[in-house]
Amino acid sequence: MKVTIEVDCTPLEAREFMGLPDVQPMQTAMMEKLQQRMLENIDKYSPEAIMQSWFTFDPKIGERFQDMFANLTGLATGRSSDKK
Image (cartoon, rainbow, N blue to C red):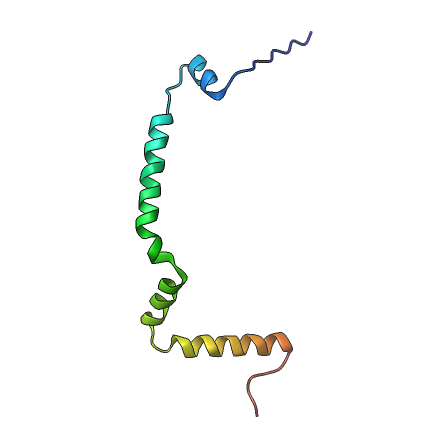
Protein backbone atom coordinates (compact mmCIF):
# COMPACT_ATOMS: atom_id res chain seq x y z
CA MET A 1 0.00 0.00 0.00
CA LYS A 2 1.28 3.43 -0.90
CA VAL A 3 -0.09 6.59 0.68
CA THR A 4 0.78 10.05 -0.55
CA ILE A 5 -0.03 13.16 1.45
CA GLU A 6 0.34 16.53 -0.20
CA VAL A 7 0.41 19.63 1.97
CA ASP A 8 -0.11 22.99 0.31
CA CYS A 9 1.22 25.76 2.54
CA THR A 10 3.58 28.69 2.47
CA PRO A 11 7.07 28.47 4.01
CA LEU A 12 5.86 30.68 6.87
CA GLU A 13 2.95 28.35 7.59
CA ALA A 14 5.29 25.32 7.49
CA ARG A 15 7.69 26.96 9.97
CA GLU A 16 4.81 27.81 12.31
CA PHE A 17 3.43 24.28 12.07
CA MET A 18 6.84 22.76 12.86
CA GLY A 19 7.37 25.19 15.75
CA LEU A 20 10.37 26.90 14.20
CA PRO A 21 11.06 30.55 15.09
CA ASP A 22 10.26 33.39 12.73
CA VAL A 23 13.63 34.64 11.52
CA GLN A 24 12.29 37.29 9.14
CA PRO A 25 13.03 40.27 11.45
CA MET A 26 16.60 39.02 11.97
CA GLN A 27 17.10 38.50 8.23
CA THR A 28 15.78 41.99 7.51
CA ALA A 29 18.10 43.56 10.10
CA MET A 30 21.12 41.66 8.80
CA MET A 31 20.39 42.59 5.19
CA GLU A 32 20.06 46.26 6.14
CA LYS A 33 23.43 46.14 7.94
CA LEU A 34 25.03 44.36 5.01
CA GLN A 35 23.64 46.89 2.56
CA GLN A 36 24.85 49.77 4.74
CA ARG A 37 28.38 48.32 4.93
CA MET A 38 28.46 47.71 1.19
CA LEU A 39 27.40 51.28 0.45
CA GLU A 40 30.03 52.64 2.87
CA ASN A 41 32.80 50.69 1.14
CA ILE A 42 31.64 50.86 -2.48
CA ASP A 43 34.22 53.54 -3.34
CA LYS A 44 37.08 51.23 -2.31
CA TYR A 45 36.13 48.77 -5.04
CA SER A 46 35.74 51.08 -7.99
CA PRO A 47 38.07 50.30 -10.91
CA GLU A 48 39.93 53.56 -10.36
CA ALA A 49 40.56 52.82 -6.67
CA ILE A 50 41.74 49.28 -7.41
CA MET A 51 44.14 50.45 -10.11
CA GLN A 52 45.45 53.21 -7.87
CA SER A 53 46.11 50.74 -5.05
CA TRP A 54 47.95 48.43 -7.47
CA PHE A 55 50.15 51.19 -8.85
CA THR A 56 50.96 52.74 -5.47
CA PHE A 57 52.10 49.35 -4.19
CA ASP A 58 54.98 49.14 -6.66
CA PRO A 59 56.04 52.11 -8.80
CA LYS A 60 57.37 49.84 -11.58
CA ILE A 61 54.24 47.72 -11.83
CA GLY A 62 53.21 49.46 -15.06
CA GLU A 63 56.41 48.27 -16.72
CA ARG A 64 55.91 44.78 -15.32
CA PHE A 65 52.36 44.60 -16.69
CA GLN A 66 53.65 45.74 -20.07
CA ASP A 67 56.38 43.09 -20.05
CA MET A 68 53.93 40.42 -18.94
CA PHE A 69 51.47 41.23 -21.74
CA ALA A 70 54.29 41.34 -24.29
CA ASN A 71 55.44 37.90 -23.16
CA LEU A 72 51.88 36.55 -23.24
CA THR A 73 51.26 37.83 -26.76
CA GLY A 74 54.56 36.32 -27.83
CA LEU A 75 53.49 32.96 -26.43
CA ALA A 76 50.10 33.17 -28.12
CA THR A 77 51.58 33.90 -31.53
CA GLY A 78 54.42 31.43 -31.15
CA ARG A 79 57.07 34.12 -31.44
CA SER A 80 59.76 34.62 -28.88
CA SER A 81 60.22 38.07 -27.36
CA ASP A 82 63.98 37.43 -27.09
CA LYS A 83 65.91 38.41 -30.22
CA LYS A 84 69.27 36.70 -30.60
